[in-house]
Length: 266
Image 1: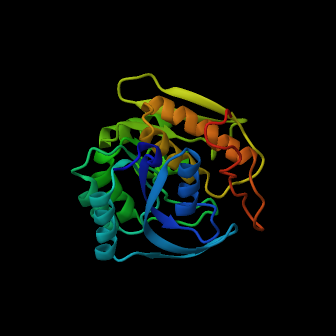
Image 2: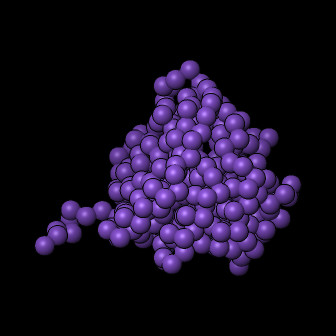
């Protein structure tokens, strides 16, 4: 008999691998683990990158990828899913097929460009994301650049409404790329007034902040929080990881995802 004290909420992460450990799967694992959850991981793509640049991306074989997701879903009680960089249209189709008959809350981080400016997603891939994954998505977390690319809208409110019309239940657009004194993130749902969250703008650039945020939202949902609380608490946690960031390479700063222990007050 399983002792309930020896169990943790489980989050399925589907994302790419960053060998520097700043973004991708490792970022997700750390953010989820710090929340007190267990991360199961299926890697979409391998990358050759560091804190300065990204040189190459190699998507996984779709048949092997499909098998990994299926075996995890067959074995474990998944309470939330975070999807990050995908890498190819074929993998988008595979993810859709694997998750379309589940009731798992899905957090989608539509990684289109890296923080160093490298394009990480083809136009065909993000068109597939819109048509196949957004109808399954609980919340999508684009930055302003990604929101504009996905919707072909410069006005962010129109962009958010377009994403909602594509099928996602909620949108969190993050404002780090905008020329504002503070960072303003805006949370949209179809039936509510948008909520703005304002955060002090930090002077450095960071490697993996979007991964940290989206995976923390997924962990918060797995813990039973409602969506608005999951989003608010994840932003607070992420800002703390950036404020306490680590200088580990010659380029961008790594979020310090263990700057606090689980359940400590931020």
